Image (cartoon, rainbow, N blue to C red; front, side, top):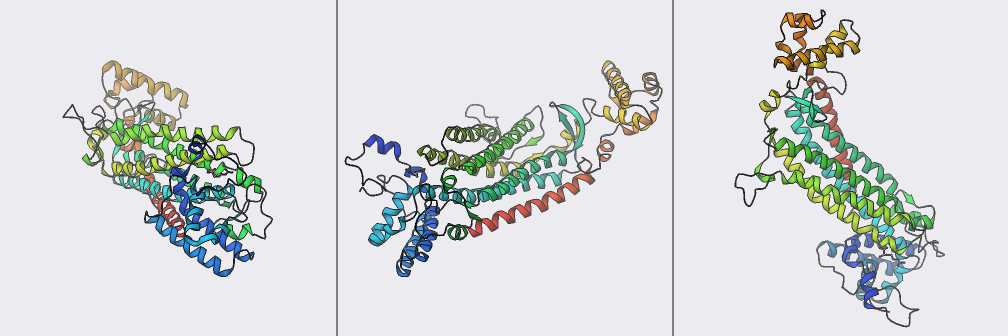
Length: 473
Ligand code: ARG
């Protein structure tokens, strides 16, 4: 039997180099090593209680596995290029260190339940990291939102001026999307919290092993109730890939807004030098690369989700080697988010808003026309007609090249007799914003309630992630 390979007894010939090269996964699955080692510790405890390892054997194996975890984190535990995968590499290392007793650990388990367990453990930790990073990004939006709660801005639909809003309200919207992503990850974690360990290759074990006990030791809620399902299910990977893809889509939309805001045409935001880049040819340029990369990288996050689903769709419900392809897309999504989230957080934190420029464009595009219609509705006119009348005011202003509040008394009554000069009182941006003070509205009073709730949400989600990570490695 070759080292670092866990099979071969029934083979007469050695496998070809091409077969080995295709099969090998150790160059990417090595990052599961600390989780595999933790699973092995739980398994050693199970074997000990079944009488298959003596207390002394179990103690020395567990001590060595713990040492290997530390050495992994110190970067000194390394696989060999001849190892097939992380499981084979770790067994080889254990046997090299402890002798034949290291080989006892394989009783009652298979790489099929092992890899599914490792991947769940890994992803649960990774998801907690993402929750922490998302909470930090949400906080960056909350800080900016609070600072600009009283500033006014044009609100858009169809990227056209629609109605004036509080700039803080406009900024705070992003924190809500991120908190939904966090909520999805927390909810996902509940379903991912079931342990495949003990399922063996597919049929469970004839040895006296207790999967529920190892599940609890590894921080799972319970063991999976069907050993075939345990080794074949990758819903947790597909769902995680979807959540990461949706985070990517959110970051992309944020990126798109920031690109617009930083353009000369908008002139809303100044990017800090620390979060922009220059041009190699045009000395004057300052580019919003963080925002652009957020937009660009969403492509691979979506692609990774599609890879997983496509790999899964034709598989019989059992372990099939295709499943080895589940890891790299998820690793890539996580690596992508790990570099992206801190950069976007920095960009948002350090952006300065040109509040005068933004406020000046709040009333443009006749964005107060709805106020005229609402004013007429309060005086008894059906909204259908009020909409017509307000539209006629806009038409008239366009012809005259003036703003709504510049229509004379005579021009107003000529459009409709109900339009008395008092209507001008509602043609004010701050009034239009302050009037929308109900729950979820854009009035500073409502925005401040919203911000208080957001703050307590992110401190709750941060605490959740921190406690998960404290319980992990
Ligand atoms: N490297 C494999 C994977 O990632 C481990 C499981 C291999 N199982 C097997 N029966 N060949 O899926």
